[in-house]
Length: 279
Image 1 (cartoon, one colour):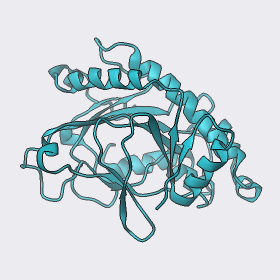
Image 2: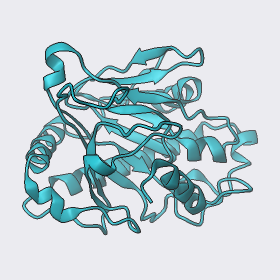
Image 3: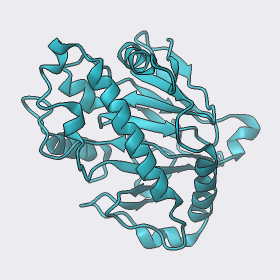
Image 4: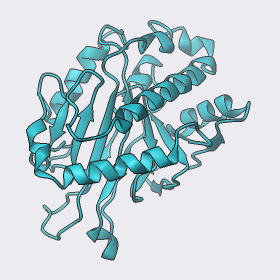
């Protein structure tokens, strides 16, 4: 499985990126405009947040889906009965934001949202007309002023050996949204599955952003773009004693966007959140 790494600054990047997304469901963007120093500083802040008791002051809101999701209510991937070994905080510009944290995370939200919109435009520009003709509106219009794009700060705690049998940090799943942007996590562990069922490690290069297509892109393109299965594995030996943090940005369309004959963005999101046990 060949997930391409493309140089953001080259003229051929948009076409190469879209081809990788089509062939594998993933693409990696190097030399992107987001500061590695900013990403590192944000991870340090959230590491302290998850280690503190104040996180419980921001318990998630079921109706809005913002705030802190503790281990006890963590997701169960679709088709799985065991909860993932993780806790996380979901951030929207209109949502609650922990007191004491700097504005760096919101700066990252803005920067990543702008990059995500650009990458979505790359996809739109390089999608064949017989496929894009099925879009209910151009991809770029689907996300215009959308309040649903969400940054999730994930904390996978050190393993203790007492975890439920079969539990892993993130069980095999596909993303719900249009595309996901993932700056390099603090530790490796992300794997993608090819069409033969084999798993492949995704490099954890601090100077790259991993991008994958989600169910909504798959749906509105009538299956042209895949929504590739991926997971986060449990580390072994001494690495099991170390935490892992990551912070994907999930690019979502507006609620009213028609994805297919049967689903709007709102109806599909609610269906999947019910399956995940989050509503």
